[in-house]
Length: 157
Image (tube, rainbow, N blue to C red; front, side):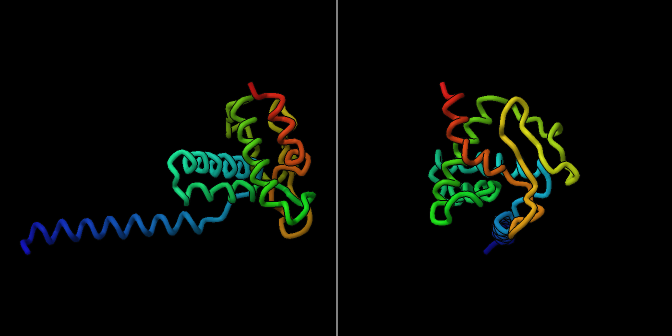
């Protein structure tokens, strides 16, 4: 094997290794729910990936809806229905947000000091959870989850 081909092979292997390590890192990164901005950013990013996964039939991206569901407070949804209702609510919320406002992340609080934040001109609310497994996390409120379909019905065209 010539020296040039050996170098090309080594470069390809290094690139492949780097790409694999990046994929593993991103799969292990936690969903950021530390403040309203992190929650909105995590939700929107996950839903954009999910949409891309539906369009391209890429399984790993389609599973990103589970990350979006993690941004929702589902404590008032019966346990057996949480996955189904959570995914449904996530899809409706993304549709509503896309139709009513262009998100300006700089205007969303990135501090834990504000325990409640509402998306301008909507009833979509992110609250800091006070108890249970999600204590301290900022999640879309149970009322937002419950009314997600209603909000969608109001803004669909």
